[in-house]
Amino acid sequence: MNAANAEKQEILLESGTNELEIIEFQLRKLLPDGSEKIAHYGINVAKVREVIRVPETTDYPNPQPHLVGVFSLRDSLIPLVDLAGWLGVKSANAADRKNVIVTDFNDMSNGFLVDGVSRIHRISWEEVESPSQFLESGEQDCVVAVVRREKHLIMILDFEKIISDINPELSMEKYDVTEDRKVLIDDRMTAKRQAKTLLVVDDSAFIRKLIETTLRTAGYNVLAAKDGADAWEMLTEFEHVAEEESLPVSDLVSMVISDVEMPRMDGLHLVKRLREGSTYRTTPIVMFSSIMSEDNRNKALALGANETMTKPEIGKLVGTVDGFLL
Image 1 (tube, rainbow, N blue to C red):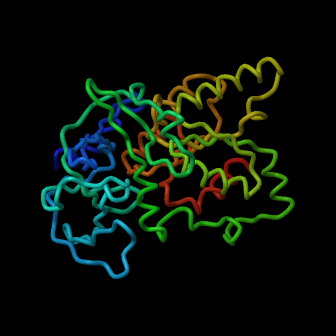
Image 2 (image 1 turned 60 degrees about the horizontal axis):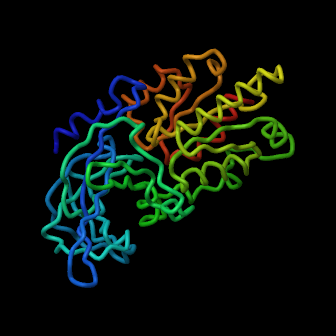
């Protein structure tokens, strides 16, 4: 699986092709009658550093729930998370029979206990479906997408939410724009921001709400889309309205802030399509993603994005938007 780590910078493939690779893994759920049920989950290869055997761990004082301990890997101290426990699944396997998926995104590494890792799927984002309303339960949802295979469904988990829940000190929820001295919030600046409308595109309801709250508190009008296809439909409709009303499209949407990983249409493909037309050729676009490596940043900028940010950097968001629009 180290090959996956070596190749992960290639995962976004030829930029904007709307493809990805996911690692499928399993959790063995112990049912009340003593039988087992296998649940299938997935994670983008671009977030995975490697897959290892369960390491020796050291207990962490006063740990968060479901934090097994910490372990050392190549001079890094990495927390180990009981993924089944966090999901509320009673595991059928002893810990020593499990594997650990070591992730690397949002400028941090974490380990997740799983019962098995089966294979890598190379798929189009068009095959990745948004979860149904039954699965998407607002702030508490942990499934951001679903992939259908021949005999089962693969649930793509919201690992950013899992990490922020287990380690709140690292969460973007800690950020409060009203306490940020670098952001000016007064009547004049609020009025200037209120004249601008931003479109926020992210498949995680958790992340979407954090970004919306930060921008609205600073004064901006905010619209939201749950994936790239949803955003494309909205932006196409704005284009039609602008033509009918003889308005510049910037009167309807001033800027796009988009994630990269999303069902149906990813953020890079969205940028590519927007820049191919004339309507949104100069609209400022910021990519706000947990997998914004230097290579992915270069791909985003080459496609026409104006700026990229890594998701922990929410403290820079309002200042970045101000720089483009004000």
